[in-house]
Each structure stands twice: as C-alpha cells, then as structure tokens.
Length: 313
Image (tube, rainbow, N blue to C red; front, top):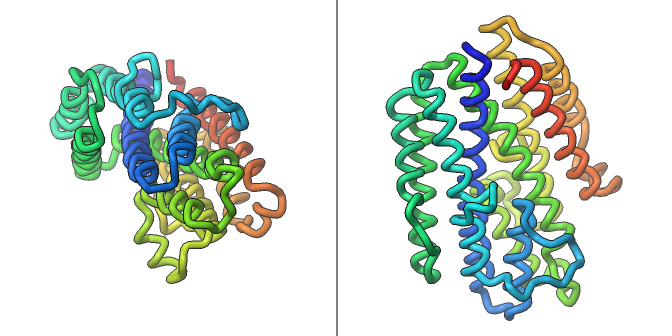
C-alpha cells in the first residue's frame, strides 16, 4: 500500500471518530444545560464543551457570556473556521476517502459521503429540538460508518482506519476527563452534589458508558469509579487502556502483514505496559490532571511516530 493511501485511511479513522465524539459531546452538554441549575451553570457546561475540543478559554478566565447553547452548538457542529467542528471533520474525512477510494468498500464510501451531505448545507443548529434532531442524524451516520467498517476485509485499509480511530479515541477520553476535573464544576458548588453528579452522568453519556458503569461497578455513581472506568477498564472500548491496547494490536497486525515495524510499535507497547501496571489510586495520588496531560502529550508523540514509521506525506 502506498504511504499516501495509508495516511488517507488513518486520517479517515481519526476524523470520523472526532466527528462522532463531538456529536455526543453536544448531546450530553445540551441535556446537562437544560437541567435547572441556573444560567451560570449552563454557561459553564458549554464553556467546558468548547474546552474539550480546544476552543474554550483557558481555565479560570471569565469569558462565559457568549457561551449559549445556540452559539456553542453552531461552533461545534457547523463552524467552518473551527477545524474540529463536525462539518470540518466530516469534510476532511470525505476528502481523504476520495483520495483512498480504491482501498474502501462501496459501503464505507457511501457512509462517509452520506454523513457529509447530511450536514453540508446546514446553516444553523436551530432550537433545542432541531439541534437534537441534527444530533440524532449525525449519530445514525456514525453508526452507519462503523457498521460498514466492521464488514471490511481485515487487511491494511481496515487496520489503518481502526488505528486512526483508536489514537483519536484515547485522546478524546483524556481531554474529556481532564476538563471535568479542571474546569467544569463551579466554585460555588460542592463536590458530590447534584450538579457534580449530573456532570459525571453527562460524561458517561458522552462516551456511551452509562449502562457500562452500572454493569461494571453495580454501585451508585462515584467520581473515582468513573475515572477508573474511563482510564483503566479495558472492557470499555473508549477507555484510555482500551484504546491503548487496540493501538498495540493494530500496529502488530500491520507489521505482520507489511513487515514494517519500528519506533511506533515500541512506544505503543511501552505506553500500554505503563498503563496496565498503574491504578487509579496512584493516579489520584500523583495528580489526575498531570497524568492526563502527560498521556495526551505521549499520544501526540505516538501519532508522530506512526506518521514517520509509515512515511505519511
């Protein structure tokens, strides 16, 4: 496979995963902001959503005045100047899919193209119900892509797209969890209160893990258990360990087929070994924020190593 085609496939995986995550982030924040905790709490929730995707103000800066549901949903879904908006990421996924068209099945191409066409001409997220309708449509398109992808032949095209998805998934979960601990809860609210509980519930909904939490812990919602699940439970595909394990396996699959192994494999295995030897108590002791920022930086280095190992242009 040409290096350019491999890069196209890898970035299809990253962009489609990012589009789905941003869609789920919008949905969870919209539902959280609709609860009766006041205007300030609603604005804080929308500021946090922007911060997760790198569009919010630095933590501690009081710039929440324009953080309304309409403005933030427009930024997250439709803003062409936001490189992480759903429309921007779907557009880039489609461009990469066009370049790698011969490596894709008809179903995968149609799913990506359908997702792009569905949002291409949208000019406004509309009111709450219209926005929820848009979100449902985007989620359906993401499921269509995932369904088409799992039916592909297991070879380089499939593995490179899944590799991009896994790298993106770990990054998204780390950013989401970091923002919750660093920014989301207003200073006037107590930890463990109703707002704190609903924010953790919104995070579980963002990563589609509300029922998974009940199955794994069979306990009332506790922040440290949510953090444990999102970081260390490999049964959850969106956990940091789950994404890390998938990256190791996918690089091994690609290396076994192509014979091309190197620094990316070494970094991925080393990272996964450190993660599975750690635990949530040690992470909290050393600082969750520091752990998550270190993981995000390490994930970026691994992304660069993958690009170099497979000679992405």
